[in-house]
Length: 114
Image (cartoon, rainbow, N blue to C red):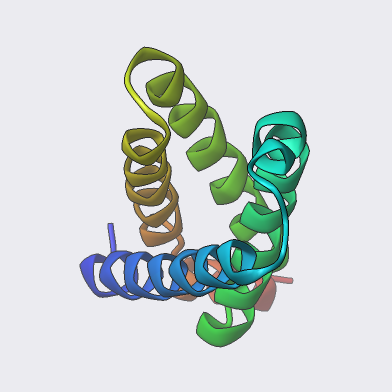
């Protein structure tokens, strides 16, 4: 586990989610939009934030998307049991933990093998 990468992924993804949340709330959408379309808009926003995080941290896209799915599933379970924002926190933590498990040196060593 790369603790530094965990904290970076957590910080960048949290910032991306926060910025996108503020932008979405500032748009002239009625409250029903999020109730009716949140199940589609939420995952699309989550993946968009993940793409930004992967780009900023130079993470492989496949690893970042796997982390997004893992975080999204964990967040959905917590959201159903507790609340939306508790689910977001769980999703962020699982996402960061999954990203923190990425080992660039091991990947490089595999690439150098004949």
